[in-house]
Image 1 (tube, rainbow, N blue to C red):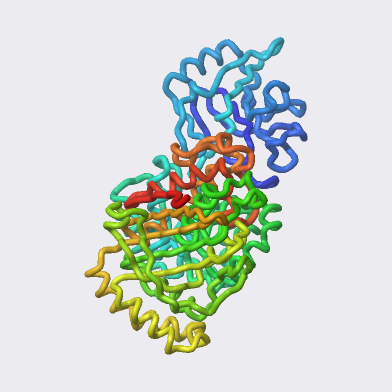
Image 2: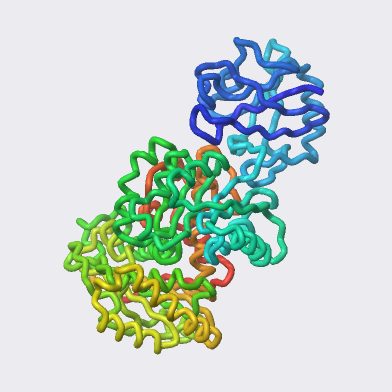
Length: 566
């Protein structure tokens, strides 16, 4: 058979290996050979991209089609050397009726993307492709590492990501400290997926706090993305996991962190991430995460980005309120995170200036988690009491929008007795004691059996309410409700991860086969660096797609955004 090959952009930085997808087309086998052009922008090192040849390497003077034809320089075509053009054209035309190539994680008909072009005056046939052929071509599925993969949120995130991908498109790498829990996690993952076999999966024992352990694993597994849900993040205030991912040149990194100090240290790595080609998104769960995107949507409905504050359309106030009933089995970790927060300042703005307040668990207020009487959110959640907690979005989104007034946060739970108990405890226990891990963790484990009991009598529910007020008094309110707090956090993190994977410059096809491509969103879609959700959501070309994917996950009851007032 004839050996031919594809020249395309590698999925890694210069010097890394380039994977090939072997495909049989009418007896022809596709295999990698070197493009000898030192100008090749598809280079893996200094030898250039990949060039097909017959039973051996290309000649020293050979070049991939992007350098053999100026008219093909704008795409990532592939070349066939030393094959009679007429017979190959006929073979490909015949084979194109049925075979399917896999670009990224979407299977696409070969005939849509390939046309044979006879190179004038030569015995070579150059196969050029339309824009979709620029998608990265992989011999293996995407490899996504879930740090905290044996936890309930990590498992739910892995299941959601897999079910959103085409069959065989992704390999789920669950990482955790305990092999027994890892084995149980793999079984739970299968159950979460309802018997679907979209993805392969494996567990890898890892204590990421051990020096070099995570770096070694990232090198060994050669992952495409890291999704970090192994909280609480106060144990990694220097953002060591993100740093390891950047050093390993992992293309995509997402976490669900919430401490302000962590966020500051992560953002300080922006230049390192740019240099390594890593696009990192921190604080990208439900809240913070989805809530940040809703806040930007509210702000831009009141104040389009191209109007500016000078036109009197600035944002004055910003309020975030959340409600959860039942933890969905996510356990002591979420209770610990809540307890630790009572010892931290709430990152709010006052009169347009950042002014953190020691008010967590105090100043209870009532919030309507609906926009109008009788809507789905009103029936599911209604009006609830909330108390301040140090959610970072009250600081980061307010700073991003440059608000002139105040920001606030609120958190409530059910049954209501828990709110009463927590507010009373916060009033009695010194703030400094809440910051002590032994105290907050001990209290979490002490209260966990009570939470388990009450969860049996409380329907698991989750709600987000964001309100933005413009300087002219107009308000915009966004309300989202979901059947499960755990699922909403996991689904949101998985959707953010998929959104970044789809925007890699080597992929013009969506990972899941439904999202917008990088070409459709624009050249600005891929931005190596360290970002917060509000920064990416303030791209008007990207936000509608983000909102659509985040608000249409399984279990979502409602999601509505409305401008109120004059």
